[in-house]
Length: 216
Image 1: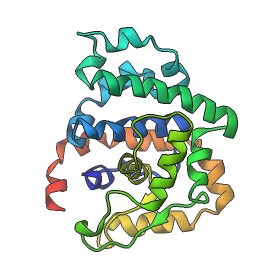
Image 2: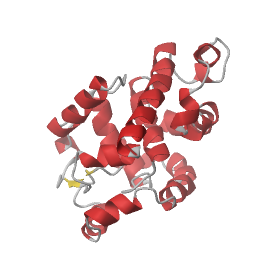
Image 3: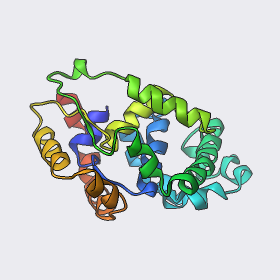
Image 4: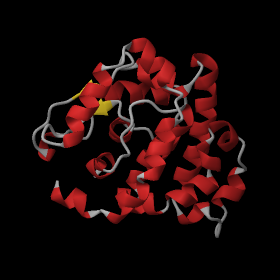
């Protein structure tokens, strides 16, 4: 189902730490929800989790968030909700150490997207050795609900890996975009707010065109 998001503009090479935190949260929610369900509730996620500002989320009152009848309780299980707050706390530590969460994440791939060249959906893996490496490091740092399958979904929607099928029009666009940026440009652009604007503006179309995932 990750192809559904990537087909509808969710893919973006360089994102802010806030945007990456949001995509990490949404990817981890896949264990309980589908992508269409997640996107349809995205406005609630953003309201509950302070527009995914990791510093603000790290200070949320867990008891209020998980209380029966709360807006958050309608989204995910208590365990998952608590893990989101815990992960926000860990992200603030990562930001202190690396300067930003995106600097840390992109460092695993040398600041350049991994380009796969799959022809058929069945060839796309659910996890990779690189996802396993990132997952283990996140767990070591105290993150929760970040298994390699979750992390690979996160890598796909965040553009860390380009898994568009080679016959998809977005495949070549993303390849050219990555080739046009050297390491410094990628790092310097990681805080570009344009990514937020592009992703947000195309979500309504994504929700309305759920049939795209079936065509794949």
